[in-house]
Length: 226
Image (tube, rainbow, N blue to C red; front, side, top):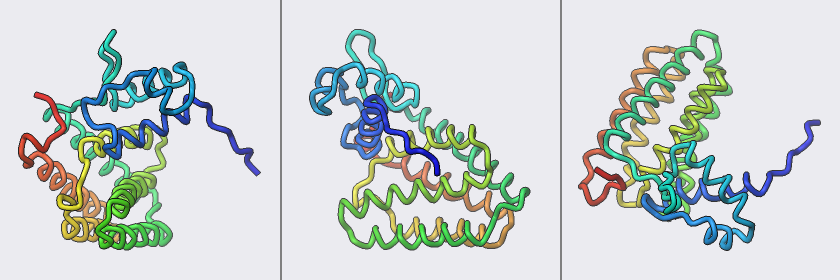
């Protein structure tokens, strides 16, 4: 049996702050002061500063020298780059996974269960259901990248996914259930077919549509800077 490792205070602070940023509870541009965060988390400033350094490395926080840190404010060019990176990582991973024979019944079952649960959570029309749906969205894409069996790509993908989520803080009114049903459903069917080209095409359509939906929002509805 593998021994369980207890998280350090810095790791716990990192996980908590990351979740608050990704969920939108700490919005773009929000100032992050180590003393205030330490008080809120009931820990000293040292682990908080370590957590902020990791979050800056992940591209979720920006340092402003003496003025402290802020939740990153993405530019439109940043958003284009994030989606380009996701396209490269996800399509490469599924292509490699198919070539290695890793599209299994277990994978299909896991994706199908995720898809069904995702739609069920959205149907609740609650803030809690939306938060869970967004988590399931990340999990769906992580499952796909996982078949590539490349740990470095998996880490990069995790960072890019969190950046995507940070810039795409949804409300119930904005989250398009029909588009998710259509596009995730198409990806699932492509996986069932075992055809790498179909899988890549379905992913490309979905990610491009997600990017275009985001960039089509009114300027005041975008957590970005010029």
